[in-house]
Amino acid sequence: METPFWKTKTLEQMSPAEWESLCDGCGKCCLSKLEDEDTGEIYWTSVGCRLFDAQTCRCSDYANRLARVPDCVGLTPQNVRTISWLPSTCAYRLVAEGRDLYWWHRLVSGSAETVHEAGISMRGRVKASETDLAEPEDYFDYMLDDEP
Image 1 (cartoon, rainbow, N blue to C red):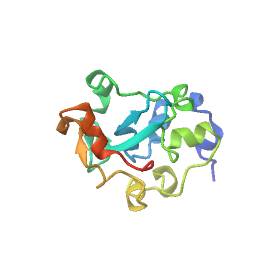
Image 2 (cartoon, one colour):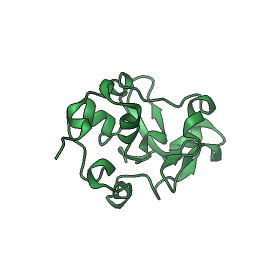
Image 3 (cartoon, rainbow, N blue to C red):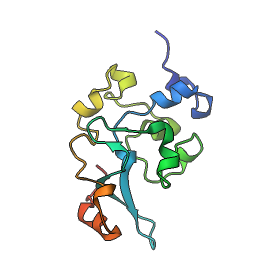
Image 4 (cartoon, rainbow, N blue to C red):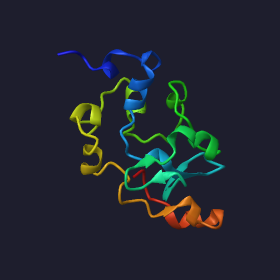
């Protein structure tokens, strides 16, 4: 049996298809996060990006997301090593740190549904879309105690 690509290649060595396949579809990247300007601490919310489809846990316009959402962050092999808010379970983060993927990741399980079945994804847990909020202060109503 051949060793999986994420165990033999660096992020920089991956093909575009391999890179994209690392996304586990949890949807956590697409949640709004608040940053304390004094401490740099990140606070998670249950507010999804305006393009986030809470049922599929995918972007509804992935190809154009960076143009349509000014604060959307496109992940690269370089920035996944420095973005502090990447989820602890994120495959990009895990591979960058030399760690293996979890059993529920679709590349391991063979199914895109296991991330949802394992309760890792945001399916059913997004309480609002950023388009629902009128004022920046409204995000405070959706703050989470911990990383989801």
